[in-house]
Image (tube, rainbow, N blue to C red; front, side):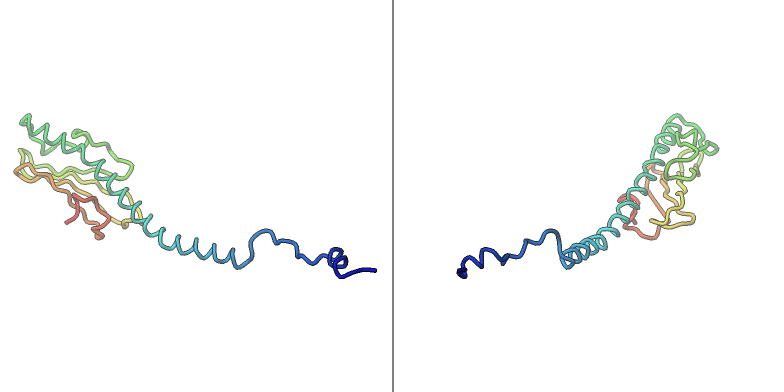
Length: 155
């Protein structure tokens, strides 16, 4: 004769343990990743644009040394090319360089014409180093979003 205890042992009353993730758990994880991406992507794009503009400023900065060296020698720099100042024809961030130089130490400017990049705008975007008559260099730019510019270029 079978007692209830023996019947209970024979029939599988325990459900097998479920393995893996349920659909709801997966949906929650996907939602969390989506929210984090929504927050992080604009921050990354802003950081990337800032880094590119800082690199462009670093490319045009060596021209200051060339201007100052030629002025210290007493050279008339009004017809000096940007390459004679130590600037290349083009850089990784600068499409071209231009120098507008006053012959004997007046105001001068070194201009980096930026390569088109949608992260900081397209068109004739520039970063310039401008030397005043008293020898002080300032950074200027025609980029509208001042937060993207390197600190010395913000007005």
